[in-house]
Length: 229
Length: 294
Image (cartoon, rainbow over all chains, first blue to last red; front, side):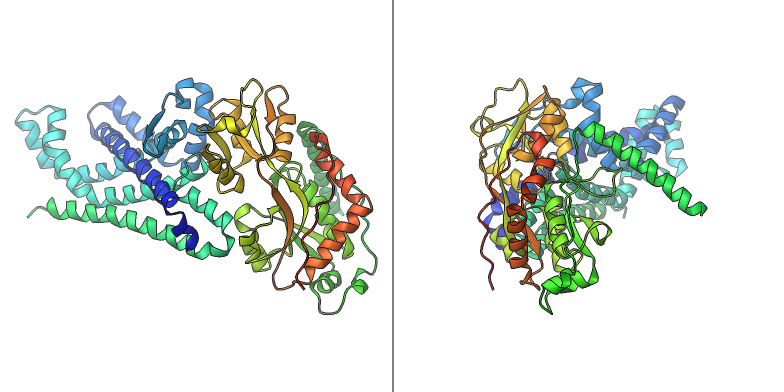
């Protein structure tokens, strides 16, 4: 345990990267996922096919392969995808090409799952709701944003929370793709302090448990608040 | 009969493939001939681990599979190559074990201690730096080689020394000592799964340098001649030793003696020239080895 306590600033910074990866990817994937869900339930055939194709392709690809693509492949095809234009520094945190490629991989991957969670919610909204909304003359965007999605999101909260928890843990893949987040730091510690492996492992596991608990807490708060009486 | 023939064909194909692979990797030569000691079992006292291994006629040795020059195995070949591997062969030979008697187990940085503790391997020769923390859980004899960390940069880079990478992103393997050292030097650590991914990142200019043992870097510089170069003095000292289980402390003296013998008989130099020599590293003196606790 000493290794963790003596280097607590490094541990905090590592979990900081984990949290940043999670937050940024969560926001992007929620937006993308909602758009994809709208495409999949929408009336435009081309968009529906695109949405279905995206989910089929991305959901069935291992996350590590998506990471490999963005870290080693994409930059060779499109120079912008090397993300070398990203160079943001906040306090002790550096957000450069590696962080951006990790966010891109995580967001695009998670968006497919978010899309499906929201679509499940949309399907849970009774048909009559959408029909009534159309009957009073709302366009598709109105039907979705005013009537269907607010109810759908409510039904989607539990599966969304699961997806986001998975995202939080998936950030650990970035540890071997250039971002020294929690797992990357843990590997450094276990290499340096072979005699304290168990303590180090447990300490980092507790870190993840705390983070995941926060996410599930927020989810149950939202669930309770949005509960239909 | 047919089975034997099929096997022979497969073996031939495998050999052809491994030869082809050799062509790609530059010169790859077999180490010096290893002569297994005869009746080796008689040389050891009853009850020692060495005696047990010699009687059993087989030994499990953990080496790296991804470090050209030290311990490397490409997909096509059956046995790894490199300086660590040659030293391991010398140790096995003194027990009268050679060829099929040696089971090569891939160890990565993370599992070297667990593998020794639970007996998955009998010895570890996997660019295994000697540290106090590691000696608290396993035995480490040696060092048989002292190396240091350098920088690998693009051929047209201005970086000449470790002082020049302060604040720059430098790549190495996640969780390695090299990455810690780089961080201590003020550079921003970037960790990848393997060295080859780091080399990619240096080649495409995403990171300014990669850092690890000079011997490994020299291998990559040789592979990418004209595009990459090794710069700077060694800014760390890694004392590479042999790992063994704490349950059999008697192995320490045997390891030290065997390696000293290999050095005196010139096998050490031969092994070095065959493995690390081609990347332009000179044969070092055998480092002063730590005394074994008895």
